[in-house]
Image (cartoon, rainbow, N blue to C red; front, side, top):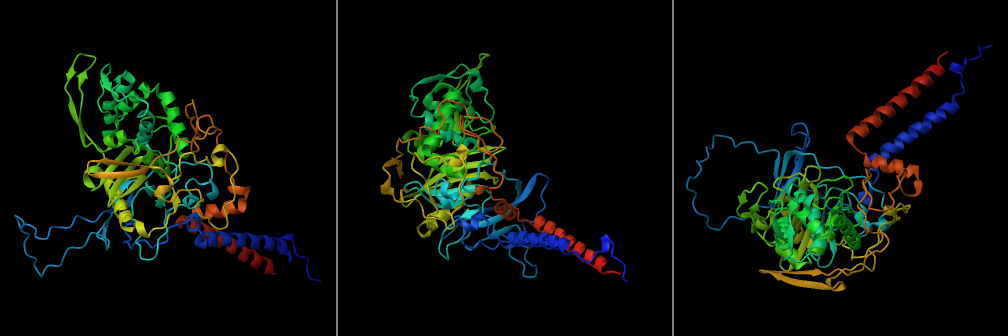
Length: 552
């Protein structure tokens, strides 16, 4: 009679083998989900054109600590004249016996003449965490819920330039059409581009000739200052000039104080953002200096930039190249003469047809920008956030060149909403809805032509600009009225509103969908390696157990 097998060598391992098989199958599903699963961007209008072939230098460029290899695109150089003058010191003749020098592996010239350079740059900022907004509720259209580059173009249209910005949006402010975007609703620090929202609130409220006395708090502002002297008088016109040209934080605080104080001005800025439909935006510091809870998005900056450019006074400031700012007397009696200031927006000088709008930079936000240019009667607006390239105007110029060259062939991926667009319910703490099986078309009420919105045509010098005029409709129950936005570590909340709930499983509370979505999002080489090791360990463990059970 054969001996009775011990529990360690029992011959009925079916229950445990079933567990092993199920665990192994789950791991295989996760691997295949990462390798072949379509991420959010592919289902929601991701880039439909191949990116240019670039050398694999991104991983091989050695960078010091705190920096990362970064690719950026510079626009094609200006064509040389037909008959250039002879150089004063002509180069020596080429020796046919000497081989040519090796090309720089970190520089690639594309067929259109633009140059892609790989350099070491400060790492870009990480977007803040906010509620999961369903595509059906995404401001501007469901396609703008996607991640990565969002583009709809026929074959043959080149991909947008490679730029370092975390997010950007290219739009036509005359029609409101969004031509292309990258992470348009990513929540990031806006830096001094937030001064456009301050100007949108204070320009209509303050008489340009009114006199403002600089307070000690305004004159001692952190960061960039235009040079206010405590106790000295300035007109609102002079303060707005310093605000826009040199991004003076002291001018921003003085204007906020003249408008009733910083708290009420910030509340008015948030109310104005809600009225425009810029629900990603929360202002905390009117100057744009980094502050807890402050945020915006490239999409929102497009709404704000379009609105502020409707103000003739702002357009005049934005296109002013230089200004003589008044001097004064400091507290010790020292007299300072008037001094010259120059516009910090380099795009005005470097890019033909540029008409504004506002640059920004802080250590937390990196480079942010709202730029606009007019060419052949068409005005395009570019907003960028989280850039790490210096000079920062070159990526803007590259995006504008691409957009002007291909705008007629691009299909809209979204819309700059008209004022009064409702706040997504997820921002109010309400549960989102499951994404639709197929991306629906843009809402039929969204304006698609310039005639759908009343317009304003203005001429500054030789540049004529036509922009839509916002209506005065504004939400009455969701925008703040008199409170300062509260501080939050999860994307921020609009002042006085209910904080968004923690999202554990995504829309619908489906843990399986959440796991697969997280797997697709975290699809990195290290993820593959970890899964491969775990899968191999499970397989080896199962084989070893089977061999032990079959041994006599």
